[in-house]
Length: 628
Image (cartoon, rainbow, N blue to C red; front, side, top):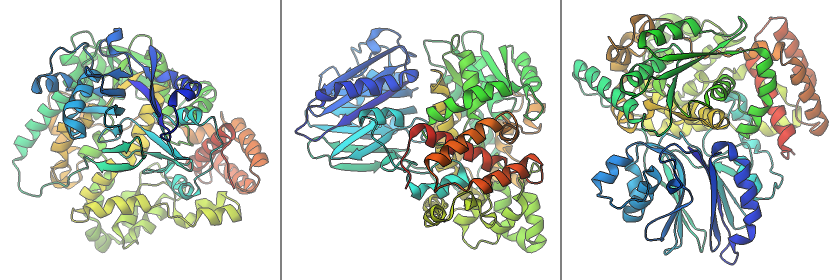
């Protein structure tokens, strides 16, 4: 795993004149690749790279890398797990290295960007054709690896992280993208192409840009998107056995590495399946790792994970996390995300990586399993929504949907969602912990609140849902999740939290073949009669213990509500005061103090809203973003 950065200037500019900016940009993402770095200048373009050596640890894998003909050059972040099979298929000979980078580069030179659809892995890369004067920016199909882009003053800047772009533009003050604030307030992250920085966008998953270096004309191509399921009758036993084989193949495929590989084990189905197949195929003793909290407010899965690790015969490690650890690390995580990111699971994930990085450079993790196999209760409920509305009334349906650990307004939020006549809005409301009738935008002062309310927080759901209107509602929800919460929240968390510690995390459930297979199967087979992950559980019978398959789902529980009330209370109010001094017309401090008091007294649970406010103020105070 690595990090990339680069730029295209106007044709009259020599990129080499900006060598110091590129050097600073490379240094800013040193954590993504501490083993080596490199740069390359070609006329008005430049590429930078930092390397975390995983495949072919020699200098033969150094980047930026030139093709054999010297015509093409690449700066690449990621892993393509089927690179050896592709090299054999296309008869690539006389390769100088054992790296996937060289295979990608030579194939791209021979076959152009259409070859990208055959890459099975996670990646974001830039390739220059020095003869035709073109550059391609490419991102993997599910958005495992990020790529940010800024177009300004007839120049294009790009990098694996926003901080690297900031260095390329000499730390020019960037402004808040007000159009994304309402969305961030509901989901804790900016969704889709835009970020919370005005002018900085993400390349969407499954897309590549083709850029004319001379004119800076850009063509955006979608080379892959999720496919709707087939509703034809299928042989269920065949589907079960095929799913087992494809999942095992995906895990085995992602064990390719020239450095030690481990597994993050939560004790749930997804990570347990990965650990089981990895321990079977890994040619050394597999290391597994689990995090637990040293206080009761967090979910603790240590005992469950250890029991499974003992059964699999892995070398198991337990990582204990305390409130003191959190206070020391939360500010660092805001810096690594470059935006106010609110999935608090980034903290235990980062701390896990910090503990393992000296012995295990590559770790497998279970992200994607819930979206592929129906791991969320709402999928089944949505499939029966009209019948349930008629039979039980809105209140009872809301109770069925609402999780037992309710937020302060959970039941009312579900009722409001169920009243919606628009399917996209129903799904959007079910995916946020905020209730629009409770007006979470009240944290803002009046004039700023008016700006925020000009933009719908649900627009991304409307756009994505339009692609799958012909599907059943539960299938729509799963496909939309794969386009929104998976890349913009869960995979964003995985990339930034793990690369901050210089660890490569792989996600076998997002294997190309496994995705294609599971997305072809309707929810009626994956979760019949509401049995979550039924197909996956049947596929793992005899491989993963029954108490794991049919036990209560937990996950890495993170007690952010407890933190903002206690161990992070001082940090919360210190940053709120600093923010208000710098941006006096944005946050309603009196209102925030009131809900914090209500939260501490446990009258209502405002934990997630307060956690988002903490991340927002930390980010703004550190980034000096312009807010008008």
